[in-house]
Length: 297
Image (cartoon, rainbow, N blue to C red; front, side, top):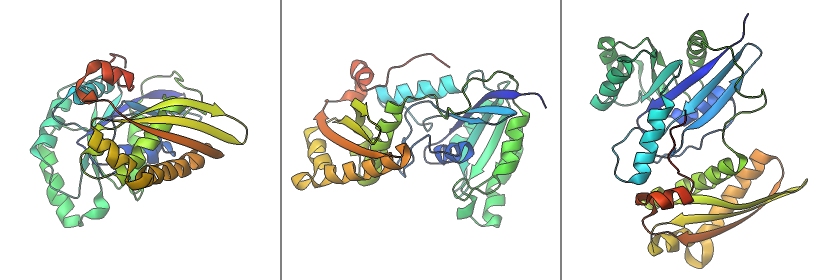
């Protein structure tokens, strides 16, 4: 069998399970997950390699209306991710009615030359009768194939994986076999810290949070990490720190445990919280926090 490789864009509305699906297909946590919308901000590549194939899955932010410069940055990442790929996976939440926005987005993607798979996720949260009724609206849309899956429970993933492999058109190995993502170690560390903030802080505060890694010192037995959490308001800073530092301590402990599991050794983590007013609406501030817009694939 000849070697085949290619790129797969994974798109859809917020909170439909795109990142969970990629993590399961790659076999390792590449993208952070949380129950909050717009958890993913960047275009993140997860790489699955075996003897005969290399699939580069491109995780994208959830499709939503732009309200600020950060939203426009995320929208640009979606646009870039769907250029020059072998297949587009449009992921939807099968536990609820498929929205007009979903159907219109699907129709738009199907107008292009790239094959589109409709991936209906979260089938574990729906009865068969409700699911079949919901997906019947896909009969009028020119998607190449429809897959009903549960990424969380790893159900029905094999047919999807086989269909993806059948669409690969390249024969180039883009990444070494042991490389699982295009992102740096520092990026993954920052995202894991942000994930814990998303889980531990309520309301709107997490959407105005950015994490910058100030320093990483690696030793054989311990990794020392210093990071700054940026927020938009003084009131948000007090929420992140908590009474007598209780909340930032909880964020630090949760982040450290996740990092030690990922890295496989002890981690010493120091976190600072600073205010950068209205940074989501300031292009310069976006770049300082790591969200610089590019036109790369």
